[in-house]
Image (cartoon, rainbow, N blue to C red; front, side):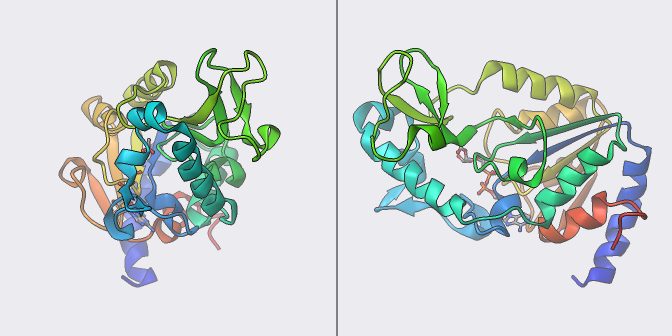
Amino acid sequence: MDIENRQDRTEPVKAVLERARSVLILTGAGISAESGVPTFRGGGGAAVWRGMPFEQLSSAEMVEQNLPLVWEWFDYRRGVVKGCEPNAGHLAIAEAQQSGRFEEFTLVTQNIDGLHRVAGSQDAIELHGDIHKAKCLSCGSLQALDDVGDDERPPVCSECFDSMRPHVVLFGEALDEDALLKAYERAAACDVCIVVGTSAQVYPAMHVPEIAKREGAFLIEVNLEETPLTPKADVSLFGKAGEILPLLLRTENEDR
Ligand code: OAD
């Protein structure tokens, strides 16, 4: 789709946004694809590392069976993210929040790459954790990996001296309840919910747009392709997040 066609499709949606008081954006791996972070599914292909699918590596079982291997996998992923910078999609979201044009603005992400923070977004609800942090297996205290260093794997907790694990929600584990409840509350109260770059297959994150829709929000999807959310969305905009979000979120004054 060329840029003019995209503008034609985004203009009516922009009008909905102009009337919105409370906006919630939920992002998935697709928003970071243009920054060079591989996705899990969809256009990015399945993630397999050393012959093992990511579901097996990123699992609660693997933490028990082979914690050093889990660290190797997440150190590898952190290495991938290290060279990546936020793209126009991350920046458009950060600018929409900073502009203060919406009374309430909530960013919920399934991503663990920290690129929203680097782009300038504040108070993002990180449903699946943060790859840049370690968490103690015993006392649960969190530490930034920049402070912990790369030498010791698993790292040792500075509070209780037990082993630490990556601060990431793994397959077979529950999400942080406070984060999830906050996301649900904001979803129930928003007027417009924009879901960007997620295959819409992983729960409970996908309850967020479902709650928003059920409570009357206008649901917009931005993705390269159709997802299970497409039939529920009021509008689906197919294309790259880094191209669509600036068109959608920038106001006339900001358009460049
Ligand atoms: P997926 O990898 O499942 O889906 C990525 C989606 O992004 C696909 O639907 C693609 O079509 C879309 N996409 C790719 N490039 C895009 C682009 N440039 N612009 C717009 N869309 C694009 O990622 P998630 O849905 O985020 O959990 O996966 C959910 C969770 O599954 C992840 O958070 C991860 C994994 O298990 C944890 O790590 C805990």
